[in-house]
Length: 139
Image 1 (cartoon, rainbow, N blue to C red):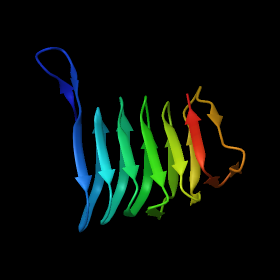
Image 2: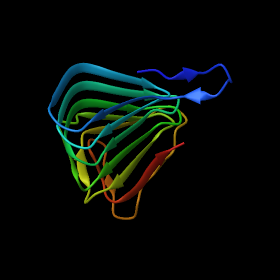
Image 3: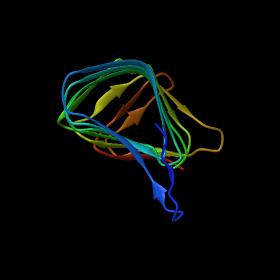
Image 4: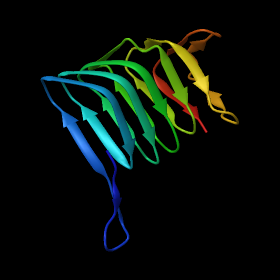
């Protein structure tokens, strides 16, 4: 999904909303785009967000192998949504905002030159990451 610029040179974002049903795809790429999941199930191999990509899970189930949060992008997870299957989380200039009770993640990878801050109740080790409520930001 890619947004662009209109004739007035204003950014226009592409968007998709999943309210129910099942979406199954090998990958979702977002560039100046937003994906809102309020319900249903999304089975996806890789989600890749760059240049102001936003994914919001506040309902339903997201089953994803790999999540790549790049340049000025953000992933929001709230208490109404569930996550499963995440093996890899890559932060490269983007951020993860946890608004639910927390989630167990797979391997955390940071891009070269990227810093990572975590909320007080979050913890990380060399193999896995868990994120508790609050923002986790890589800048």
